[in-house]
Amino acid sequence: MCGIAGLIHRGKSSNVGHELQGMLQALKHRGEDSTGYALYGETDGKNFIMRFKVGENVGEGSTSVAEDVSVYDERKKIVDSYLSEIGAKIIKEERILPYSLRYELQYDKKDLLEFSQKIESIPGVEILSMGKSLEVIKDLGNAKMVCDRYNLDKLVGTHAIGHARMATESGVDIKSAHPFWGYPFSDVSVVHNGQLTNYWNNRRALENKGMRFMSECDSELIAVYLAEKMRDGASLEEGMKESLTGLDGVFTYFVATKDSLGMAKDTMAAKPLVLYESDDLVAMGSEEIAIRSILPQEIDTYDPFDGEVKVWQI
Amino acid sequence: MANLKNVTKKTKAQAMGMHTEVLTGRTQQKFFNPDEAENFYYFGTYDVDFNKRTDLDVKNMSAAEANKEIDQLMSQGFGTIVIKNPQGKHSLGVGILNKLNLIFEGSLGYFGMGSCDGPIVRINGRVGWSCAENLMAGKVVIEKNAGSCFGAAIRGGDLICKGSVGARTGIDMKGGTIIIGGDAGAFTGFMMQRGRIIILGDVGINLGDSMYDGTIFVGGEIGSYGSDAVDAELTKSDQDWLKRKLKVAEIGENFDVSKMKKIVAGKKLWNYDNLEPTEKKGAI
Image (cartoon, rainbow over all chains, first blue to last red):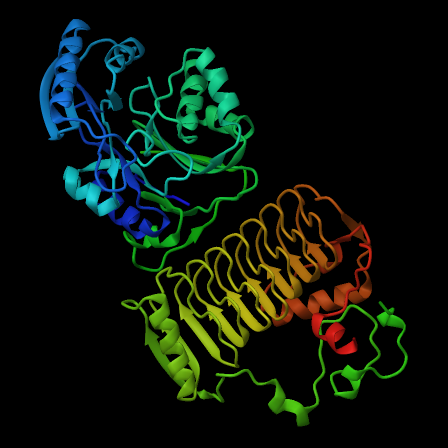
């Protein structure tokens, strides 16, 4: 089933980590195999923030194979050496969990393709996000568990999207969890509720064009599909509109960039979405109770129609 | 099977007092003999007094607790219940099988007022997916917008949304009337079998797709017609009915119904008749 939620504050910052946690926790009945956050925090915009994993969570319910922590250590060492090789300087590093790390990097090149390919050439290493304000945090468990584990409650920012996952198309693991980074574009993330039925056809075509897939989760296709459109010069909104015919199946998805948040709904409107929009806040989720977790007062909400694409700026 | 329209002698159903008129097909009305009234009460329903009114704050209740409390209040004879702070909870007000004035001061989540038979409901907010699914009788009025599958499979009653509704409104409906003050999404009237849908605004693609029977009236633009849906002539009788219905629904009273489009099923299905299930059962 899965649940998605997102919000964007226009003209101000807020405690988006706490707000999104509340929204996703309200949707936990839609799936709590894993939960993911894409948070756009307040930064000075100088350095990149790289969230990456060197292994999987092998806790209860996981479909991953257990590895020794020493394997993670070894992978981390290789990441550090590769970063040095490609000219990225580590300004700050945090090892939040044995398999999950956050680096602040000084890296002057704009093209992240070469950078990402180099780091992800290390077996077992995946960049969860790369950007100057985006941080993707995803792990097994419900929203509160992940929030507590990664201490997201205090994160201040302008916008965020998140996902509560019931695993149906692929394994219970972090690599299949949402949000997906719009590799190799800085600060692009995607969450999706639905099923894509032309996944393999699209995947083959995109891989032939040099695009990268890390999981077998159909939702990853949306991030890669949009990334490819943007690589070819389309705007985010143009790419989203093309996706309504390029992607087959039932879907509602959110995509976020450094300064915007968008939603798209398939032409059959088969997946739910409730939307609240005011001058200073847009909040949306698979169910109204997600929005109510941050706006308990009576508000006007609506369901976007079939084939609708909307994009909001901060 | 006998042609039910041509049966001239009184059927068993008529003998029981269920009908006083000759069956002519499309009708939403059923006639009961008051002497038989006791046979038409559901188990677990209550005699309520509409003048006996109370408030119920469900802010800290689960949907199941709230519904049990509504049932408890009805058993005490309360005929008017005002629900405070529904806050988008799912499945509120389901399974009410007797007359009741129910007012929600706020919005409902999914499956609100599902499987009801008889209550008069006003929701001063919006509703999520599948509001009033399987409604048998009564009236449900939503003051704001509604989600998809609005009035799915309703058998009777009036379901009114003063705002806009999502996709698949009236899917599989088998009777009753759905009235929309704003726009409606794709696949409105999908596989509808009986009943009527009125949309004052625009409607999305595939209107009336695979409809068996029933009628859809549209005041605005139509995205596209679904398979089997065709235009029909809007008669004087249709216009009179529309005016009457919109007035009762407190919606679009001054709407120019003469410009509405009427959409019906273009295909006659084999071995399909348009009798209400109760009529058919009784006649057989």
